[in-house]
Length: 225
Image (cartoon, rainbow, N blue to C red; front, top):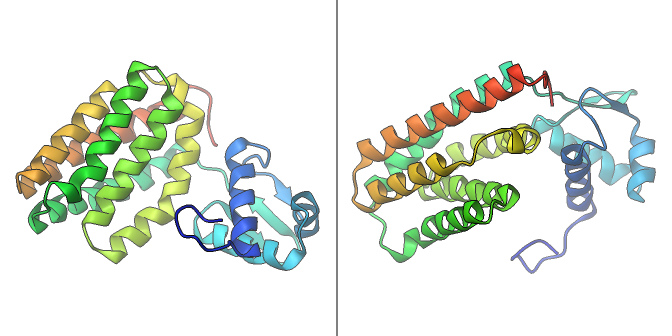
């Protein structure tokens, strides 16, 4: 079942979810090539949903579909991440501004506050995996609050690439206390309707986070993930 939807997943959705998990776990490593028949057998599915799922993941930048040659898992480099963060920084900062301009009430901002609370608890428990999920939830909710489908579409497309890089570097970075403080400041600016301030804080946050991730990829021997 899809989370919270109450609707059964299609075979294509199940195949896409399974392939995404294999890529994130490293079982399908960056730069590796795989035949559709191989993947279908591994997933216990027919080739048709696997082929369609591969096209979905190609649109998200996770793999490349090559006619008669199967698929290639696309590696993400430090240079790729620099470009991705340039785009995310601009679009998410705009989302923060739009959210502040809309004038949301307290209950409507509760998902952002809840995400921050989970991030704080995760740092106290030194559980970076839980922190990363809460951080992702914050950013996704921030974009949703902008009510701009184009921003949502573009940031969703890039989200998986960021997730791959962050999963690999998660335990190489210091505890992200500053990130929590940044998110709290963005929330307060949105709550106060201070659009310019919300955008500026989030921009600095994304620029700092992007630089850290790119530096980790560049200087830790992780040339691609």
